[in-house]
Image (cartoon, rainbow, N blue to C red; front, side):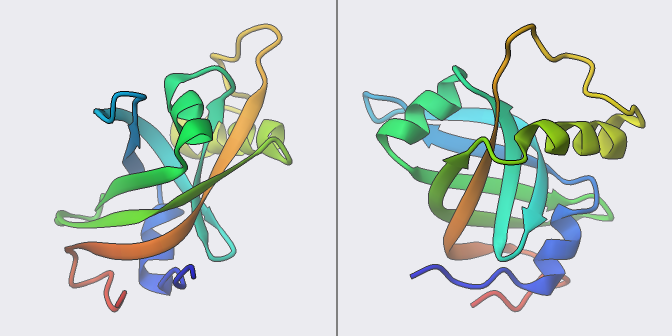
Length: 138
């Protein structure tokens, strides 16, 4: 059963948070990618494109971990562990909102022709880390 996203961590996620996403390759080795983080409802999330290795990995094994640092307190971080849910619903509009937040641009500038955008939402199993300003998360 997923655990709730603490409001303190939600604030970090919607405030220009960069996350390091860990997925698992077919041989079990980790694959790490930096992403722009966000949150919706009770789920941390990020936007990506179909065909990327992290999407391929998550379709085979939905386990995911994301390390997120508080940009206003760099010594604080949270490690989110959970299960990924992949959807295309709302992904196109979302990537443009993220471009506005992170780049100050109205549209995401690196979209490839024919690219299918996806949202990866996370049902949280556990949160750890060192982040006194983001707790409680137990």
